[in-house]
Amino acid sequence: AQKITQTQPGMFVQEKEAVTLDCTYDTSDQSYGLFWYKQPSSGEMIFLIYQGSYDEQNATEGRYSLNFQKARKSANLVISASQLGDSAMYFCAMRDRNVGGALIFGKGTTLSVSS
Amino acid sequence: NAGVTQTPKFRILKIGQSMTLQCTQDMNHNYMYWYRQDPGMGLKLIYYSVGAGITDKGEVPNGYNVSRSTTEDFPLRLELAAPSQTSVYFCASSWAGGTGELFFGEGSRLTVL
Image (cartoon, rainbow over all chains, first blue to last red; front, side, top):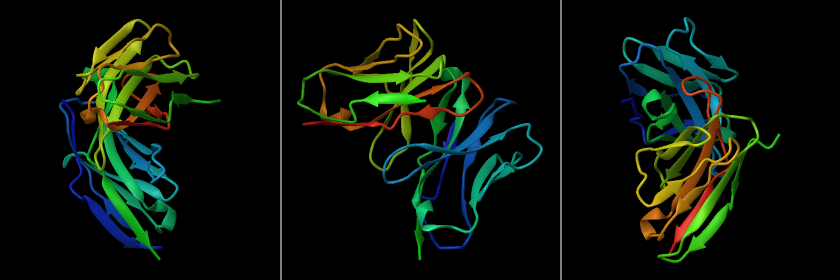
């Protein structure tokens, strides 16, 4: 079964700084994908970025990039130039074919951005 | 395009009552999921469906039931509500079972007193 581990319960960063949110995963699949979602205090789940296991380049979406290290089984989210609106809970996840492709989530990291 | 719609958004139940959380998607997705999220925690899978007429249990199915009579609808039934079912419930859907992101509803906050 897939497993996602996020070891940072909370992270603090100042505006305009970059921050890295850690994620490690475990899977026996050769083909898989890693996802990051953002959950602001309003509660909705917002998809941020996706990395496929066979993608040669690290994924990027605006200020978000994914530092994918396959051999280390890590998929860290990097947020550049943090903004106050980035304050939220961030979840790393991967799909599990054993349960109909459901996303299996880590416990999340709360990011607080201060001015 | 509404995406995934959940109703109600908020509900308070008494212990032992029953209710149904409704979930509808208008994206013609075959795959649908129900999750629960307890305070400060990640999402846990309750039930999933890979198509109309097909449902299966996830990690935490006890106390819940689902049905999938149409592609669009995936209601979650709570029987004999207990305080342990106080949580935020999310419905989600996707095109395929292995790739692509899940699209989430806005969540339903349920309190059992």
